[in-house]
Length: 76
Image 1 (tube, helix red, strand yellow):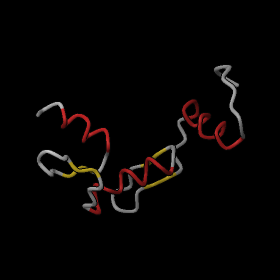
Image 2 (cartoon, rainbow, N blue to C red):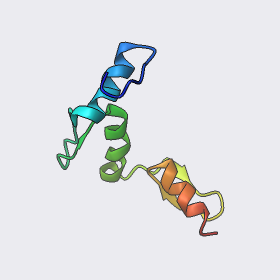
Image 3 (cartoon, rainbow, N blue to C red):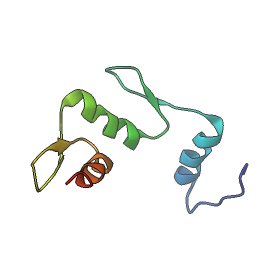
């Protein structure tokens, strides 16, 4: 391993190795942006679909990423 980290299974190791190789095998069919993890692609696709599964309980504004909701919470 390049960095000395160890992982519990081969799929986690393969995911991690993409950090070192720069490989981004998962492409967005809408815009072509590429990702190193399929889960990152799924999250990104919320931009195009308009899906907003995370909503602010105070103002009901919706977000496609939980981290964007967390950042929004600081505005209240």
